[in-house]
Amino acid sequence: QEQLAESGGGLVQAGGSMRLSCATSGQMLSSWRIGWFRQAPEKEREFVAAINWPAISTYYADSVKGRFATSVGDAKNTVFLQMNSLKPEDTAVYYCACAPHYAGYYDRPEAYAYWGPGTQVTVSS
Image 1 (tube, rainbow, N blue to C red):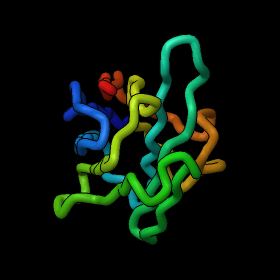
Image 2: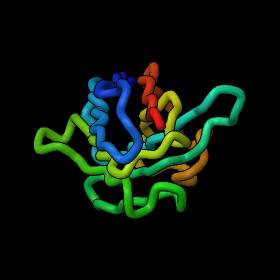
Image 3: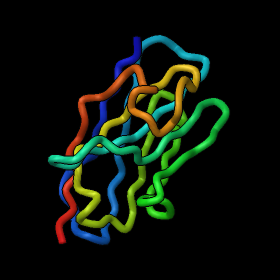
């Protein structure tokens, strides 16, 4: 069973940058997908980005394309979400989630078996 934990959230001004980390632990999967989702108050959880390993492929929501980038750390047990040109509408709790062996559709929460507790990102105007 995988365990995930996000870190790096906080408060930033509009136009600023922030990097989130997703640390994973548990069984050594031969392949996986890490997805990033976010949920603002009174809104549904929405897809942000995803990355496959070892067949590195990345996917982004239209709302963050060109501003956000996800990558795998050298140790392969940490995934990053670099967020640039942040906007107030990016304010949300950000979650990372794991889909073993690329299961399911990358942008669907139900495709992910394991979730972190989330980290708050607040972008002030």
